[in-house]
Amino acid sequence: MVVINVILGALVLSYAAAVIYIINFIYSKINYIIDYVNNLSIGSDRIVTTAISVLKSLGAWNAFCDVFSIFSPILLSFFIIYATKIGITVFRFVRETLVTFILAKL
Image (tube, rainbow, N blue to C red; front, side):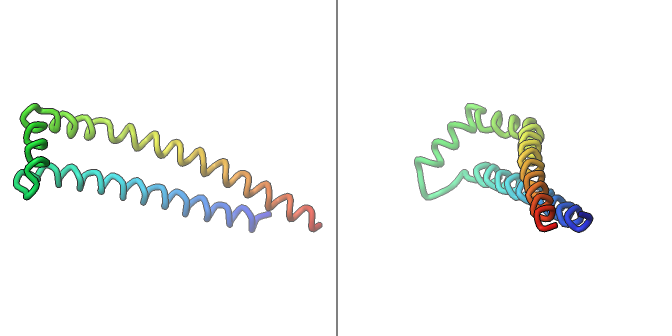
């Protein structure tokens, strides 16, 4: 029984580390895209640069950047809560299955 709890504890820690890594990866890629669009003023595609210039001149792009920077912790918190809920459910079922298997062998 102790071995099962130790294994499940290690799985929970690795799951938490994976969730944190995924969140960091997504956040950095979104910031990379926002920085790329902010620096996209001169390009070979005239339609895209014109559209970005219109969005920047209307203030819509700056509004999106501000809203993203304000609400990103809230969105990431919802993702963490959902991932934790899934992880707890999965690990509870794994633990019950392992305990049932061990008791069946006795």
